[in-house]
Length: 111
Image 1 (cartoon, rainbow, N blue to C red):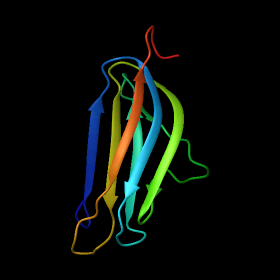
Image 2: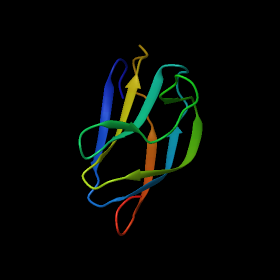
Image 3: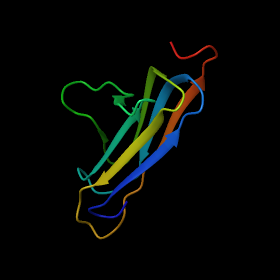
């Protein structure tokens, strides 16, 4: 993600299930300018949190870190998993992240 840019990754869910884990790795880079917002949009288009944060923070951030968050969030068919990555810095080189969202299919619907 280049300086001053925002990138969005989207994955459509074809079966009811549960989001079990969100794992994020931010390689070494400048502090304080990279923010990652993982969320999902339900089948009706309503944005929802997949990770519950304490306080007002709604993003993951860091420098040379691994974050492994376990969750048990139901997600229904035709929802979308979204990850927004914002590089708010002015450094002339791109920042990278690796993110993995693990979900399982639940037979009989997400409960």
